[in-house]
Image 1 (cartoon, rainbow, N blue to C red):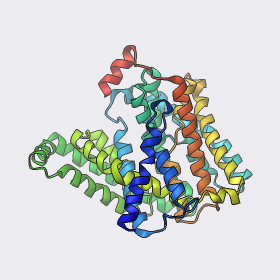
Image 2: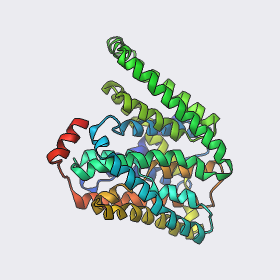
Image 3: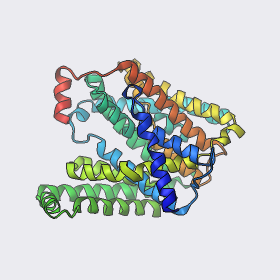
Image 4: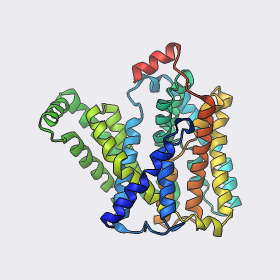
Length: 387
């Protein structure tokens, strides 16, 4: 790793905003960043070495921050989340049950034996992708109110379940690690809530703003990295550490100053670096050497879209159901963990990412056909109150 490589990485990451620039395409920025990594990685040019230890460590920091921001975006305190909680939880659970059959068929058909992993992948929803789409298109109404808790519950449950299902031999160890991280996050919530009620956070904010100390950012990074260290020591993905701390901050109430600082810190450098690293770590030529896994990726993506769209039988509009199928964090973590622990077949990691891209493509198409819709009636009031 050198400054030359960092300059190339920063330049390559600009492909994300360039592809996302046309608003009518509704493309997430991460697609361009992943594509840049694929181009610069072993798939095409071979310039970037995803195995470089410094590169990998910086990417891990970026991943932890990305999941923290994703958790902080979940509207835990919003009235719109509570308003549709019951139906949202029911739909998230129903999607998980529906995913079992196609996951079993794919695991048997492709001989991988990863039924549990495929179930979690197809049942997952990415709050990091879906919430920005909802905001950018000003989507609202009762169906969106009911969708938000569905996405939050699915994202949280699948993040917790992933370490357990990707390596069943060490599921007990992963469960204890996940429990340790979760308990620490719960204790952290109680402590921060008490500090918030006693006014210490506001005093810290005023001091930091007056003296330009950035204390909130510094303290948040200390907590995030401590939770990530605990996750690593207990053999749990740092994804859980970042997401759980994000949920804690969302539940307490994220200060706007901290949100801006984290946005700059994450979206400006370490987040794009992670996605470029991820693209560089995927050798898509493996799909050429193992063409069956290209079919696996397409089937995983199509299966995820199908089981989410099936919630049409519960009264959810088809386009909203397709929107909930958008995946990112869980497939990314599965590909990264599976590659690092050598738990996946050659070409399977690329297949998992290909499946995620299929869901993003389906979501893009569904939202472009749906178009912006403004909140109405009581749902609009609920959404405004939650905002």
